Image 1 (cartoon, rainbow, N blue to C red):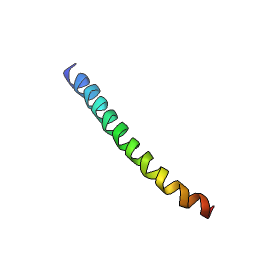
Image 2: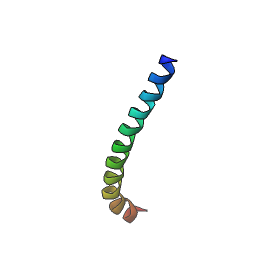
Image 3: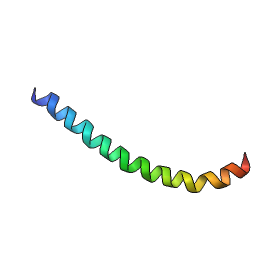
Image 4: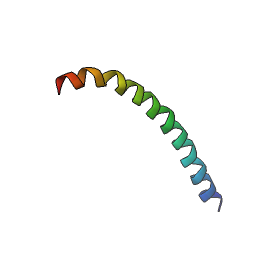
Length: 40
């Protein structure tokens, strides 16, 4: 029971880290989208 709860908690933390990282990556991609759009 305890390991299952810890695993769920770890997934929540990983999800929060992924959300903050994906938002940073999305911001970086927005900057990269302009020159890449001109190439293609």
